[in-house]
Length: 224
Image 1 (cartoon, one colour):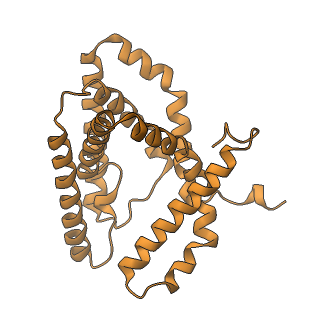
Image 2 (image 1 turned 120 degrees about the vertical axis):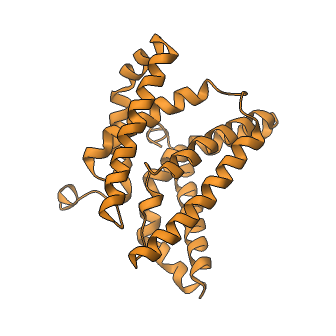
């Protein structure tokens, strides 16, 4: 009886902007139905607004920007961006997309280290969803993985589609793995990096198994 009165697990915050994205989908379709120029204008406005928000967090030296509900509408920009990138399929070389992703990852690593050293505490400022380096990496990853999937054979594409079909289920059930199994990984290794890798593997594989089992149950398969 106490469960409905408890706050949601904090990792499930993305369900709220996801719901907002679905509700705004008719508007997104209307924008795309007009012209590419209108989409471009919308993306420019979104980029300016997101950059302004990021600059505000950076100016205050906020170590952990966090995820706040007023930020949820900003995620609609990624919906538009995904649609715009889908129109670029095949026009961006695979090496260019992969190189941009590698560069973004290197910049993120450097900025996170430098900013954390400056603040004297671990900072997630340059790991946020609206950090320019993260946005560039997300675009590059989208183009790279999309291009790579189209170059693979049908068997590999079938595997990718299967794993993709489990992605929401993995996200939905991964708090269970974190709460009840992730702590065990701390006793497996002494090296913090290996502990982190073991934790990630435990969450991904454990959640994947649960999501797969749930997807085989007729009444639950539409949820996961």
